Image (cartoon, rainbow, N blue to C red; front, side, top):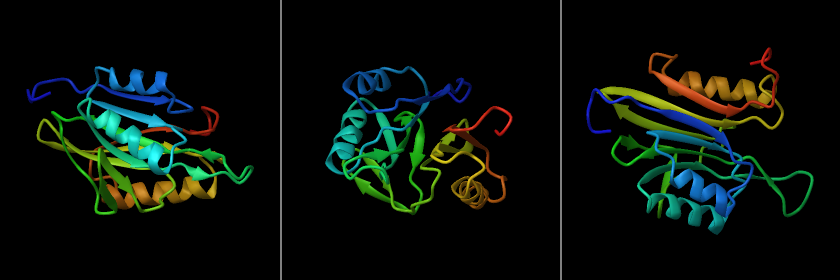
Amino acid sequence: MKNKEARLVIRFANITSASDKAKVWAAEQEVGILMLGEHHDRGDKLLNLMKYLSFRDWNCFTAAARASLESEEGTYGGTMVLSQKAIDAIPLRSYLSKPGGWLSTSGCPFGSVGQCTFGGRQLMVFGMYFKNGINSEEGEEAWRCMWDITDGCKILYVAGADWNATPDEV
């Protein structure tokens, strides 16, 4: 990844749960950037996931899962943008430094954002989850947040998401 002529491979995966199998799979991916959707983790479990991946050479930009409206103990969503540590990456101002990475405090519905530099170019990487679909209020809010973060789309970006939508809607 240090070679400026290197190719940047980016992958998105909806892992549905940060199970042991999913953690090992994510840690072993040979890509520059990996976006994970629906890890469903919060609190200590989320911090442990971030540490696990950080020890395996990933920068972690994470948004916690949200409390489920259907059950007291359940969660939904939760996203993570991972970049190999060989890629320059810094958190947005709305992220708190935690052991193993950075945790979003913005509450913006799209989830997590990684701010990377590759080949001398700035790249914003969005990992998103839309519980109510792309054409929902949260979808509209997400597009407004992306517009603001990318300075009106003047900054190169990539967005990986569980859209919960048909291809025509996307």
